[in-house]
Length: 393
Ligand SMILES: NC(=O)N[C@@H](CC(=O)O)C(=O)O
Ligand SMILES: [Zn+2]
Ligand SMILES: [Zn+2]
Image (cartoon, rainbow, N blue to C red):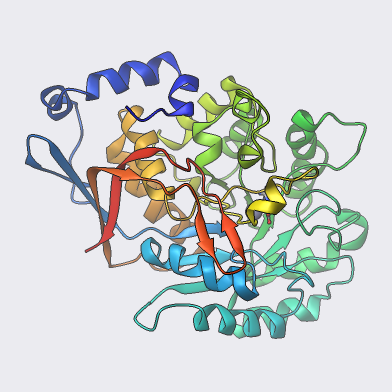
Protein backbone atom coordinates (compact mmCIF):
# COMPACT_ATOMS: atom_id res chain seq x y z
CA UNK A 1 0.00 0.00 0.00
CA UNK A 2 1.70 3.28 -1.02
CA UNK A 3 1.98 5.71 1.85
CA UNK A 4 1.14 9.35 1.25
CA UNK A 5 2.60 11.64 3.89
CA UNK A 6 0.10 14.21 2.79
CA UNK A 7 -3.00 12.08 3.20
CA UNK A 8 -2.53 12.49 6.94
CA UNK A 9 -2.51 16.25 6.74
CA UNK A 10 -5.71 16.47 4.74
CA UNK A 11 -8.77 17.91 6.40
CA UNK A 12 -11.56 15.71 7.75
CA UNK A 13 -13.64 16.84 4.80
CA UNK A 14 -10.83 15.75 2.49
CA UNK A 15 -10.46 12.35 4.15
CA UNK A 16 -14.17 11.71 3.90
CA UNK A 17 -13.98 12.54 0.22
CA UNK A 18 -11.11 10.07 -0.24
CA UNK A 19 -13.13 7.30 1.42
CA UNK A 20 -16.17 8.11 -0.69
CA UNK A 21 -14.11 7.87 -3.83
CA UNK A 22 -12.77 4.39 -3.04
CA UNK A 23 -16.03 3.05 -4.43
CA UNK A 24 -16.39 3.63 -8.15
CA UNK A 25 -20.18 3.54 -7.79
CA UNK A 26 -20.03 6.29 -5.21
CA UNK A 27 -17.63 8.15 -7.48
CA UNK A 28 -19.99 8.02 -10.45
CA UNK A 29 -22.84 9.31 -8.30
CA UNK A 30 -20.96 12.44 -7.18
CA UNK A 31 -22.78 15.58 -8.27
CA UNK A 32 -20.36 16.69 -11.00
CA UNK A 33 -21.72 19.26 -13.35
CA UNK A 34 -20.41 17.86 -16.61
CA UNK A 35 -20.07 20.71 -19.08
CA UNK A 36 -18.36 21.04 -22.42
CA UNK A 37 -15.50 22.67 -20.50
CA UNK A 38 -14.80 19.70 -18.29
CA UNK A 39 -15.40 16.34 -19.79
CA UNK A 40 -15.61 13.38 -17.42
CA UNK A 41 -15.71 10.04 -19.20
CA UNK A 42 -16.32 6.78 -17.38
CA UNK A 43 -14.73 4.11 -19.52
CA UNK A 44 -14.65 0.97 -17.35
CA UNK A 45 -15.69 0.34 -13.77
CA UNK A 46 -12.07 0.70 -12.60
CA UNK A 47 -11.04 3.61 -14.80
CA UNK A 48 -12.03 7.24 -15.01
CA UNK A 49 -10.79 9.77 -17.49
CA UNK A 50 -10.89 13.53 -17.46
CA UNK A 51 -10.21 15.54 -20.61
CA UNK A 52 -9.31 19.21 -20.14
CA UNK A 53 -7.86 22.03 -22.20
CA UNK A 54 -4.07 21.77 -22.04
CA UNK A 55 -2.85 23.66 -18.96
CA UNK A 56 -0.12 26.30 -18.73
CA UNK A 57 2.26 26.78 -15.82
CA UNK A 58 2.19 30.43 -14.73
CA UNK A 59 5.25 30.16 -12.42
CA UNK A 60 8.16 27.94 -13.42
CA UNK A 61 11.91 27.78 -12.80
CA UNK A 62 13.77 26.16 -15.70
CA UNK A 63 17.32 27.27 -14.66
CA UNK A 64 20.06 27.18 -17.31
CA UNK A 65 22.91 24.92 -18.54
CA UNK A 66 22.70 21.21 -17.68
CA UNK A 67 19.80 21.71 -15.30
CA UNK A 68 17.74 23.40 -18.02
CA UNK A 69 18.39 20.54 -20.45
CA UNK A 70 17.36 18.08 -17.75
CA UNK A 71 14.10 19.66 -16.60
CA UNK A 72 12.65 21.53 -19.61
CA UNK A 73 11.31 18.35 -21.29
CA UNK A 74 9.39 17.48 -18.09
CA UNK A 75 7.39 20.71 -18.22
CA UNK A 76 6.94 20.54 -22.00
CA UNK A 77 5.44 17.07 -21.65
CA UNK A 78 2.23 18.38 -20.05
CA UNK A 79 2.16 22.17 -20.24
CA UNK A 80 1.69 24.24 -23.38
CA UNK A 81 3.16 27.50 -22.05
CA UNK A 82 4.92 28.63 -18.92
CA UNK A 83 5.91 31.91 -17.32
CA UNK A 84 9.65 31.46 -16.89
CA UNK A 85 11.19 32.89 -13.74
CA UNK A 86 14.24 35.13 -14.29
CA UNK A 87 16.22 34.32 -11.10
CA UNK A 88 19.29 32.93 -12.86
CA UNK A 89 22.82 33.91 -11.93
CA UNK A 90 23.24 36.55 -13.28
CA UNK A 91 19.52 37.39 -13.32
CA UNK A 92 17.58 38.09 -16.50
CA UNK A 93 17.29 41.87 -16.16
CA UNK A 94 17.04 42.95 -19.81
CA UNK A 95 14.87 42.13 -22.79
CA UNK A 96 17.99 41.10 -24.71
CA UNK A 97 18.85 38.58 -21.98
CA UNK A 98 15.26 37.29 -21.93
CA UNK A 99 15.32 36.76 -25.70
CA UNK A 100 18.64 34.86 -25.42
CA UNK A 101 17.33 32.78 -22.50
CA UNK A 102 14.22 31.91 -24.50
CA UNK A 103 16.42 30.58 -27.30
CA UNK A 104 18.34 28.37 -24.87
CA UNK A 105 15.06 26.98 -23.54
CA UNK A 106 13.78 26.19 -27.03
CA UNK A 107 17.09 24.45 -27.80
CA UNK A 108 16.69 22.28 -24.70
CA UNK A 109 13.32 20.92 -25.88
CA UNK A 110 12.69 17.85 -28.03
CA UNK A 111 12.31 18.88 -31.71
CA UNK A 112 8.63 17.88 -31.76
CA UNK A 113 7.76 20.09 -28.78
CA UNK A 114 5.43 23.07 -29.18
CA UNK A 115 6.11 24.36 -25.65
CA UNK A 116 6.05 28.16 -25.55
CA UNK A 117 8.21 29.86 -22.87
CA UNK A 118 6.77 33.22 -21.80
CA UNK A 119 9.64 35.31 -20.49
CA UNK A 120 9.92 37.68 -17.54
CA UNK A 121 12.37 40.37 -16.42
CA UNK A 122 13.96 40.45 -12.98
CA UNK A 123 13.23 43.83 -11.41
CA UNK A 124 16.18 45.62 -9.79
CA UNK A 125 16.67 49.02 -8.16
CA UNK A 126 18.08 50.23 -11.49
CA UNK A 127 15.59 48.82 -14.02
CA UNK A 128 14.61 51.72 -16.31
CA UNK A 129 11.21 52.61 -17.78
CA UNK A 130 12.87 52.34 -21.22
CA UNK A 131 13.61 48.67 -20.53
CA UNK A 132 9.87 48.18 -19.96
CA UNK A 133 9.12 49.77 -23.34
CA UNK A 134 11.62 47.38 -24.98
CA UNK A 135 10.06 44.46 -23.12
CA UNK A 136 6.60 45.31 -24.40
CA UNK A 137 7.83 45.74 -27.95
CA UNK A 138 9.62 42.38 -27.91
CA UNK A 139 6.36 40.38 -27.53
CA UNK A 140 8.59 37.85 -25.77
CA UNK A 141 8.50 39.35 -22.27
CA UNK A 142 5.12 39.00 -20.56
CA UNK A 143 5.77 40.16 -17.02
CA UNK A 144 8.28 41.65 -14.58
CA UNK A 145 9.18 39.82 -11.39
CA UNK A 146 9.72 41.45 -8.02
CA UNK A 147 12.06 39.66 -5.64
CA UNK A 148 12.54 41.64 -2.46
CA UNK A 149 16.34 41.53 -1.97
CA UNK A 150 17.21 38.52 0.20
CA UNK A 151 13.73 36.93 0.15
CA UNK A 152 14.50 33.69 -1.73
CA UNK A 153 16.83 31.79 -4.08
CA UNK A 154 18.97 34.19 -6.18
CA UNK A 155 17.21 37.29 -4.91
CA UNK A 156 20.39 39.09 -3.87
CA UNK A 157 20.06 41.46 -6.85
CA UNK A 158 16.40 42.12 -6.08
CA UNK A 159 14.67 45.28 -5.00
CA UNK A 160 15.69 47.02 -1.78
CA UNK A 161 12.80 49.51 -1.59
CA UNK A 162 9.98 49.22 -4.11
CA UNK A 163 8.44 52.64 -3.49
CA UNK A 164 11.70 54.57 -3.30
CA UNK A 165 13.47 52.89 -6.24
CA UNK A 166 10.90 51.53 -8.68
CA UNK A 167 7.91 53.86 -8.94
CA UNK A 168 8.68 55.19 -12.47
CA UNK A 169 9.14 51.61 -13.72
CA UNK A 170 5.90 50.47 -12.11
CA UNK A 171 4.07 53.40 -13.70
CA UNK A 172 5.46 52.43 -17.10
CA UNK A 173 4.39 48.81 -16.54
CA UNK A 174 0.87 49.96 -15.67
CA UNK A 175 0.68 52.04 -18.83
CA UNK A 176 2.09 49.18 -20.99
CA UNK A 177 -0.21 46.64 -19.32
CA UNK A 178 2.70 44.47 -18.14
CA UNK A 179 1.89 42.58 -14.92
CA UNK A 180 4.09 42.71 -11.83
CA UNK A 181 4.68 39.23 -10.42
CA UNK A 182 5.48 39.29 -6.75
CA UNK A 183 7.40 37.07 -4.35
CA UNK A 184 5.33 38.42 -1.49
CA UNK A 185 7.47 38.24 1.62
CA UNK A 186 9.19 40.90 3.68
CA UNK A 187 12.81 40.20 4.53
CA UNK A 188 13.06 41.99 7.89
CA UNK A 189 14.83 39.48 10.17
CA UNK A 190 12.67 40.78 13.02
CA UNK A 191 9.54 39.39 11.33
CA UNK A 192 8.80 35.73 11.99
CA UNK A 193 9.24 33.63 8.83
CA UNK A 194 5.64 32.38 9.09
CA UNK A 195 4.31 35.98 9.14
CA UNK A 196 6.33 37.39 6.25
CA UNK A 197 3.61 37.02 3.63
CA UNK A 198 0.93 38.72 5.74
CA UNK A 199 3.26 41.60 6.63
CA UNK A 200 4.16 42.00 2.94
CA UNK A 201 0.47 42.28 2.03
CA UNK A 202 -0.10 44.98 4.65
CA UNK A 203 3.10 46.94 4.12
CA UNK A 204 3.67 46.63 0.35
CA UNK A 205 0.75 45.22 -1.64
CA UNK A 206 -2.12 47.21 -0.15
CA UNK A 207 -0.23 50.53 -0.50
CA UNK A 208 0.92 49.51 -4.01
CA UNK A 209 -2.55 48.86 -5.41
CA UNK A 210 -3.79 52.05 -3.75
CA UNK A 211 -1.03 54.04 -5.42
CA UNK A 212 -1.23 52.31 -8.81
CA UNK A 213 -4.67 50.73 -9.18
CA UNK A 214 -4.11 50.23 -12.94
CA UNK A 215 -1.06 47.98 -12.36
CA UNK A 216 -1.81 44.28 -12.82
CA UNK A 217 -0.34 42.25 -9.97
CA UNK A 218 0.07 38.50 -9.51
CA UNK A 219 0.81 37.38 -6.00
CA UNK A 220 2.93 34.32 -6.67
CA UNK A 221 2.78 31.04 -4.73
CA UNK A 222 0.32 32.18 -2.05
CA UNK A 223 0.54 30.34 1.25
CA UNK A 224 -1.90 31.93 3.69
CA UNK A 225 -5.58 32.63 4.35
CA UNK A 226 -4.49 36.28 4.52
CA UNK A 227 -3.33 36.14 0.89
CA UNK A 228 -6.59 34.45 -0.16
CA UNK A 229 -8.60 37.20 1.56
CA UNK A 230 -6.44 39.91 0.01
CA UNK A 231 -6.77 38.55 -3.53
CA UNK A 232 -10.50 37.97 -3.11
CA UNK A 233 -10.94 41.57 -1.95
CA UNK A 234 -9.27 43.01 -5.08
CA UNK A 235 -10.83 43.77 -8.43
CA UNK A 236 -11.04 40.79 -10.79
CA UNK A 237 -8.56 41.12 -13.63
CA UNK A 238 -6.28 43.44 -11.70
CA UNK A 239 -4.94 41.22 -8.89
CA UNK A 240 -4.62 37.44 -9.08
CA UNK A 241 -2.57 34.65 -7.49
CA UNK A 242 -0.73 31.51 -8.52
CA UNK A 243 -0.98 28.43 -6.33
CA UNK A 244 1.54 25.58 -6.06
CA UNK A 245 0.76 21.90 -5.49
CA UNK A 246 2.77 21.87 -2.27
CA UNK A 247 0.80 24.70 -0.67
CA UNK A 248 -2.44 22.89 -1.53
CA UNK A 249 -1.32 19.51 -0.24
CA UNK A 250 1.23 19.93 2.53
CA UNK A 251 1.19 21.84 5.76
CA UNK A 252 4.25 22.82 7.76
CA UNK A 253 4.33 19.50 9.63
CA UNK A 254 5.67 18.01 6.39
CA UNK A 255 8.97 19.83 6.89
CA UNK A 256 9.59 18.01 10.18
CA UNK A 257 7.71 14.71 9.85
CA UNK A 258 9.96 11.86 11.09
CA UNK A 259 13.03 14.11 10.87
CA UNK A 260 14.03 17.15 8.87
CA UNK A 261 12.65 16.84 5.30
CA UNK A 262 14.73 19.08 3.02
CA UNK A 263 12.68 18.16 -0.06
CA UNK A 264 9.62 19.77 1.53
CA UNK A 265 11.46 23.05 2.10
CA UNK A 266 10.46 25.89 -0.19
CA UNK A 267 9.82 29.60 0.08
CA UNK A 268 7.45 30.94 1.12
CA UNK A 269 7.70 28.17 3.68
CA UNK A 270 4.72 25.81 4.15
CA UNK A 271 2.16 27.12 6.63
CA UNK A 272 -0.23 25.68 9.21
CA UNK A 273 -3.21 23.50 8.23
CA UNK A 274 -5.86 26.25 8.46
CA UNK A 275 -3.99 28.21 5.79
CA UNK A 276 -3.75 25.17 3.52
CA UNK A 277 -7.49 24.61 3.85
CA UNK A 278 -8.24 28.24 3.00
CA UNK A 279 -6.19 27.96 -0.20
CA UNK A 280 -7.91 24.71 -1.22
CA UNK A 281 -11.33 26.31 -0.65
CA UNK A 282 -10.34 29.34 -2.74
CA UNK A 283 -9.02 27.45 -5.76
CA UNK A 284 -11.79 24.84 -5.81
CA UNK A 285 -14.52 27.51 -5.57
CA UNK A 286 -14.29 28.25 -9.29
CA UNK A 287 -12.95 31.77 -8.63
CA UNK A 288 -11.34 33.43 -11.67
CA UNK A 289 -8.58 34.97 -9.53
CA UNK A 290 -6.46 31.89 -8.85
CA UNK A 291 -4.46 29.90 -11.36
CA UNK A 292 -1.93 27.12 -11.71
CA UNK A 293 1.69 28.02 -11.02
CA UNK A 294 3.79 25.07 -9.93
CA UNK A 295 6.83 27.05 -8.73
CA UNK A 296 8.66 23.89 -9.74
CA UNK A 297 12.15 24.80 -8.56
CA UNK A 298 14.78 22.12 -9.19
CA UNK A 299 17.96 21.96 -7.14
CA UNK A 300 20.45 19.14 -7.27
CA UNK A 301 20.01 16.61 -4.49
CA UNK A 302 23.34 17.53 -2.89
CA UNK A 303 22.20 21.16 -2.62
CA UNK A 304 18.95 20.16 -0.91
CA UNK A 305 20.43 17.49 1.40
CA UNK A 306 23.01 19.84 2.80
CA UNK A 307 23.86 21.69 6.00
CA UNK A 308 22.38 24.75 4.30
CA UNK A 309 19.76 23.31 1.98
CA UNK A 310 18.31 25.32 -0.91
CA UNK A 311 14.65 26.34 -0.95
CA UNK A 312 12.59 24.89 -3.78
CA UNK A 313 10.46 21.83 -4.58
CA UNK A 314 10.66 20.02 -7.90
CA UNK A 315 7.11 19.23 -8.99
CA UNK A 316 6.93 19.69 -12.78
CA UNK A 317 6.64 16.00 -13.76
CA UNK A 318 3.78 15.26 -11.33
CA UNK A 319 2.11 18.61 -10.83
CA UNK A 320 -1.00 17.89 -12.89
CA UNK A 321 -1.65 14.64 -11.02
CA UNK A 322 -1.38 16.52 -7.75
CA UNK A 323 -3.75 19.32 -8.74
CA UNK A 324 -6.27 16.73 -9.97
CA UNK A 325 -6.02 14.94 -6.63
CA UNK A 326 -6.73 18.15 -4.73
CA UNK A 327 -9.79 18.99 -6.81
CA UNK A 328 -11.05 15.39 -6.64
CA UNK A 329 -10.79 15.34 -2.86
CA UNK A 330 -12.67 18.61 -2.64
CA UNK A 331 -15.42 17.18 -4.88
CA UNK A 332 -14.61 19.89 -7.41
CA UNK A 333 -13.16 18.12 -10.46
CA UNK A 334 -15.56 20.16 -12.57
CA UNK A 335 -13.61 23.30 -11.52
CA UNK A 336 -10.15 21.88 -12.31
CA UNK A 337 -9.99 23.13 -15.90
CA UNK A 338 -10.88 26.72 -14.95
CA UNK A 339 -7.92 26.75 -12.57
CA UNK A 340 -5.42 24.90 -14.77
CA UNK A 341 -6.31 26.22 -18.21
CA UNK A 342 -8.60 29.28 -18.29
CA UNK A 343 -7.90 31.73 -15.46
CA UNK A 344 -4.20 32.21 -16.31
CA UNK A 345 -4.52 33.08 -20.02
CA UNK A 346 -7.61 35.19 -19.33
CA UNK A 347 -5.70 37.25 -16.77
CA UNK A 348 -2.66 37.66 -19.04
CA UNK A 349 -4.86 38.51 -22.04
CA UNK A 350 -3.63 35.51 -24.02
CA UNK A 351 -5.75 32.99 -25.94
CA UNK A 352 -6.76 29.77 -24.21
CA UNK A 353 -5.06 26.67 -25.59
CA UNK A 354 -6.91 24.55 -28.14
CA UNK A 355 -4.99 21.33 -27.38
CA UNK A 356 -6.26 18.87 -24.76
CA UNK A 357 -4.82 16.75 -21.99
CA UNK A 358 -6.38 13.53 -20.76
CA UNK A 359 -6.00 12.58 -17.11
CA UNK A 360 -6.56 8.89 -16.49
CA UNK A 361 -7.11 7.40 -13.07
CA UNK A 362 -4.21 4.95 -13.14
CA UNK A 363 -1.49 4.42 -10.54
CA UNK A 364 1.51 6.62 -11.29
CA UNK A 365 4.74 5.73 -9.52
CA UNK A 366 6.90 8.78 -8.83
CA UNK A 367 10.62 7.96 -9.30
CA UNK A 368 12.89 8.13 -6.23
CA UNK A 369 14.98 10.58 -8.22
CA UNK A 370 15.69 11.72 -11.77
CA UNK A 371 19.36 10.93 -12.52
CA UNK A 372 21.51 13.01 -14.82
CA UNK A 373 25.24 13.17 -15.56
CA UNK A 374 25.62 16.09 -13.13
CA UNK A 375 23.63 14.45 -10.31
CA UNK A 376 20.11 13.68 -9.09
CA UNK A 377 16.98 15.76 -8.78
CA UNK A 378 14.52 14.45 -6.21
CA UNK A 379 10.90 15.24 -7.11
CA UNK A 380 8.03 15.98 -4.77
CA UNK A 381 6.45 12.67 -3.60
CA UNK A 382 9.56 10.73 -4.61
CA UNK A 383 8.93 6.99 -4.47
CA UNK A 384 5.20 7.36 -3.82
CA UNK A 385 2.26 6.50 -6.02
CA UNK A 386 -0.21 9.02 -7.39
CA UNK A 387 -3.49 8.39 -9.16
CA UNK A 388 -4.10 10.72 -12.08
CA UNK A 389 -1.88 10.14 -15.10
CA UNK A 390 -1.76 12.94 -17.67
CA UNK A 391 -1.18 12.55 -21.41
CA UNK A 392 -1.56 14.86 -24.38
CA UNK A 393 -4.43 13.84 -26.65
N1 LIG B 1 10.20 28.67 -4.27
C1 LIG B 1 11.40 28.36 -3.85
O1 LIG B 1 11.54 27.84 -2.75
N2 LIG B 1 12.50 28.59 -4.60
C2 LIG B 1 12.57 29.24 -5.87
C3 LIG B 1 12.47 30.74 -5.76
C4 LIG B 1 11.09 31.26 -5.43
O2 LIG B 1 10.14 31.03 -6.20
O3 LIG B 1 10.91 31.94 -4.40
C5 LIG B 1 13.88 28.85 -6.55
O4 LIG B 1 14.26 29.52 -7.52
O5 LIG B 1 14.50 27.87 -6.14
ZN1 LIG C 1 9.23 33.06 -4.91
ZN1 LIG D 1 9.38 30.45 -7.80
